Image (cartoon, rainbow, N blue to C red; front, side, top):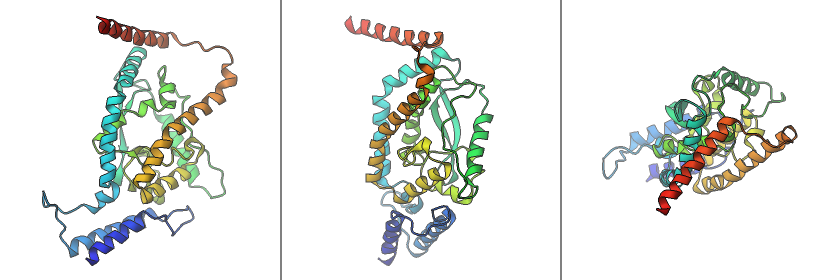
Length: 311
């Protein structure tokens, strides 16, 4: 009985806002994980909690990262998303195959919960042999700036769009976050969640300060607290603080609010981008020949479907 009360007290504290703050605004991630490990060891040494079906011990660490309600929402949401968005998947697939040679999807190793590596799926928006050095250098500059003195100005985490190798329509797919939709597969497989911190790349994690690794205390997600709280207007440290805050306060209500705010955040991001480029595009837009060809292919496809339905 006493052990059960301690476990309940731990999860209650886990969902509460952090009280012990460092100069970075959050409690050290190492100390947080150490408290969790101590509780698990205490639980295992004092009681053998077994499942009714398999007889295995309950994995408290997994329950902390992915509660049952969250996994249920992920399965339902990813299945519905894949079914409802299948026509959009088809359109994007035709467009990518028309404007660029190469695979439809882009697989990249990302670091997930607890440092576990998995393959993240995206629609390909770059040429197959595109150089990633610029992106690596950009992330390094952001992380290095985040580790300077507190009064040193830090740059916001804007997306890199003016890089060599991006395919036609690639910027549009990235700005609207359509390129991220295949990650519903990762959600269905349990590698990601609908809501959580964005999964970092391995060379990004190598440069983290100790407290930055607190981002890995939650299962990564397609959207999160950072995305709906300013995203590209925020600095790297602000993103990390929001991710750690989410990992300690996640709840069904918080996930619901984030999911509802995500379309608004994406729309706001698109409007901001258009507003910045408006003076540069005062004349009517002229699409490249490859884009026109892709749009014509999509129109022809749906025209053929229409003819089949009429018959």
